[in-house]
Length: 501
Image 1 (cartoon, rainbow, N blue to C red):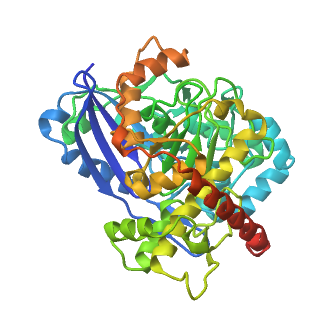
Image 2: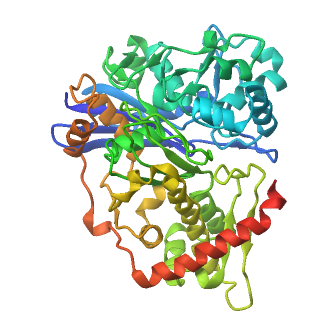
Image 3: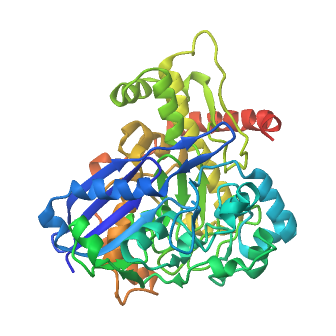
């Protein structure tokens, strides 16, 4: 198998990447921007039809000769989005996304019916948070009962693209673990949780079959193949959530590796051979898409913070990079709480963005943009404390951070990460970690390495290349500055937390 197509359905754009596994190079890429529906009540939605339009647009950017040589397809998608289908496959409502925080009351409703947050963690592995899919299902029932009455199938974003490509319904355990409905230990739906989401019907009737890491979902439909310029009958791999595919795309498929993704959201994750349940519930206890588990910390506001600051100050990307790079580490005491979309970690769905510590000397545009970048990393730095709660062995032996996501291309971001995490940062040559992971997921169809994390890592490592000149090493003097600034950040957070609850 040579050329593999990886598709990533993100929040801001859909990306397509064709990887040539024989030449070990990316043969072609395409992308298409996506809109976002935002409302003051925390609503964050997209229309599923936008993803399909973007898919056609992105693939049209790839040369016809490359598309016609694709041997397998893998799909990555933003996690937690709720795609409700009627029995005829029609999408019943706009898709509530991972960053939607309009379902706080539904989270409380589900958790109370189940027996409280702690029982959710103990029984299923995760609390019911606004980002997860479960509360979105109850929200549709509460707010649009007429549409909910027609609900026949519950899908996630990457599942819906798989369905569009193949006509087959399926869900993969890694992505499914972000619904809040899956028992992450047994890798099966939890009947009591399904009843807590809707006591009036059996939701298991609406859930598609679960597929494993080595499985195909189906094959590319012949009529659609002609429209997309892809070979009919091309196998479509199980794919998974964007974090699970980014784990594959950065080689984080065996213990001893740590990946940080700096995109619209920020994530920090490490592979584990056994389930990792955080008793506090900050660390998401997810399954990996390679047969193990992927404990993960997620913040809702990463590049959101820097992009809003950049827009406010009317800077382009190069100007922002130069300004932030010229400001001192610690931004002369300026601190940002970047909760513009509310926040998942810490769990503050009603959180707001704040710029603090300003005085007549430090109120500069450079300090504000740098503090915005630093704040995003501070939120992820707190994730190391979550890993330490019973899972410290996962990170004790880690001597580097593999960085992916849009902001990974910034030298300023990379240095801030290295200094805060006290570890060197390595940058994969392909910065489309999720799309690359989806392509490698397709490449691994039928591989004998499935079930052996070290063998799988060795197979994937052969296809990963790192840009060692673009890495970053921690600066001991700057580490001390960030220790103090991180303390100040947390002090402000605790002071203002009551205003957000």
